[in-house]
Length: 592
Image (cartoon, rainbow, N blue to C red; front, side, top):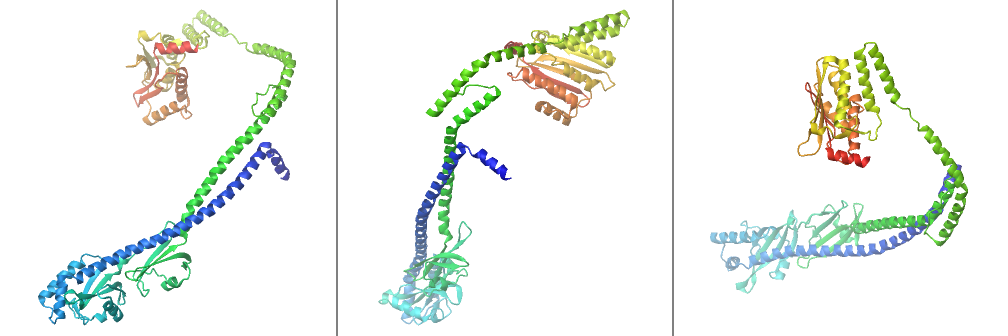
């Protein structure tokens, strides 16, 4: 095991790898130091900015609360200065009682003002002696508002005093204002109590990106929560001497803002992780930048180390090839002066050595050519024709005329198939059809009246050049699969005709055999198109062979590939196209 490891280390101990390793180590150190410094400094700046932003959020939230306070203050002030309210309270101050008409006026005026705010649950109006005159139930003011707040309202002489949460109903809070009679030298005319829904001040918790929550709570002057306390120990938060507090095993930043209008305090608890969220994008950016830098530096190091070591490797490879009788000069190098001189010295040595082996090389080459010519000798196929002719005359002498005709037909078939000529791959359409006619005659000798055929080709198309033996395999397929295995008389037709609006020629080979099922037909056409006929045995192989040859011969011409049409009980038709005379001859001349 140790030996294997040492062997691998020796193979890796190359000049290129040494240069690359040094560059990468230096690069990683530099990037690490720079990244740490940037992360620390930028992190401090972002944390400071985030803290200021949180503080600003608290100020803005308190400002929104101030707006709510002022809305209630304004509405209550407008109500106590309303002329109808002033007149009713003045009359009661002077000793009159509230009659039915006054009650109706009081209901109308108070309901109109109450409709202007969603936060005001009810307005309650009391006399100077503390008896409630609206609603009309003679309830005492001291049963609703603590005496100290009534005294504060008297001292404030008309300003709104914010009492806080109703101890009897946590869903509501109270504020009180003394009514000053403007026509009686601003004497005390009674009290207006404003009943406010705490939902009016409710600030919902905010869910941050990481799933943690921040909290906002409103406390009255005696530090009682007006809004929900979320189950948090308020006293723990208020008594904390630091700017943070730990709640439910999580650290929170405390921000407090006290309203100058109400004396109520808005408390915001922000997760410390909120500050980390601001630093996370920076960390990701630094990591991404470091990764990009590492990749760029690695690529640069690879390019540089390769540029330094490539000339050495090329020269080494060239020298190794010399051991295999491949002594060749090394291409000129432009890397550095030292490598250029080394390369020139080696090439001069190669030049001096090559002329010493030139004569030996030429002798070996001459001997090889002589042996190659000897191996290229071929057997002349004419002995086959002579043998068949001898067999023909022998059969004639014996009176076997039918067999003699078969021998002659076979001779012509062999001659057409293996005959060598200057342009042996191309024949005219007429030559191909004559060959097919001879083949059909041989098949008829075997099948008898079960086989008939029809060839329909316009006279003007017979001179068109086509690849040799391109139709005959299709005719053979039609006989083998469409006629041979059926007792009824079978017909094979070969039709050639011009394609409408085109110079192409369409050739069809039809049979009246049993046909092919639609699903099998689709698979067969797909197999021919994709040259995959392993599941169709001989039939698909012949079709694919013809299709391949068409593609090879007419690779520069766009043609519709070979395909089949068939119906059960109606036979099968194989169709393909070839170009007209111009394209065919042009292709032939180009190739040959």
